[in-house]
Image 1 (cartoon, rainbow over the protein chains, first blue to last red):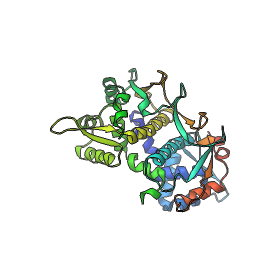
Image 2: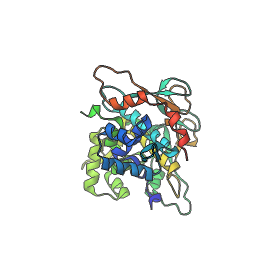
Image 3: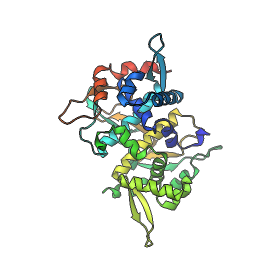
Image 4: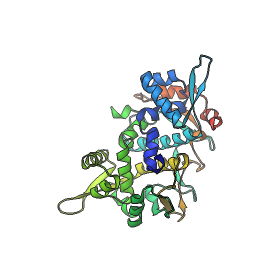
Length: 171
Length: 171
């Protein structure tokens, strides 16, 4: 059932709820233990337990015992680390487009070049910038058993290229 | 008040609610009129009206009359188009990391190179891949009046570089 739902909706199942995304951010920046996250977010133990279980169930966090009682810390696995990429892009949009008083609270130093930088969206093929206004949407060739988003696919088949619709609407 | 909240939470204020993100997606692919979106999403007129007003109020969609009655269509402005970038990255994560039966419903042809491609996260400075595991988080120098995320900033100050914590947790 899940597999036929839109990709956006399925991603929001995991991080659309605010606590979930803020917990992932906390684990990412090094607040990995229950008490640390609870203190940082000022969240009830009940809700934090629920959201941590949710993230573990979705396979983005792993629970690890760190003493014999046992008590647990939470770590990102590969799937979770890639989900943090989505959060980084969210933060980039907010820092650029929403009113802020102080700028982003942390800076990113890129290991490859050593510079303070930020993420940019590039084409995986040619490496040039690739944003929503830089692409033409094409319907995916229909395959046996494919039924996801058929109306969206049809809309793309009928519509004009995005770049004709988007840039002139900039205020 | 809004400006001191975390960037992730502020972004989710706009697109964390599922209908809002699916409406943005529809407008992006060319379903710009109320009736088209309603049919595609199978959503009540009341809820669709509320969510469209929400997106217009947040300055990501603009309402335009397209006949004299008047009836309206909705178009992305620059802020909204950049928010679609976030949705593209969400879709990329879902298509890679969540179970799908049919693959993405649409393909992206990049105008700059003409190839079917997808977005990749790169360093704005050097152009090399820049994902959550490729960076070191640094506390931003404190400035007068800065109070956002002080605990997160402190956590970053204390924590080890992200790359020491993340890669070995891959299952």
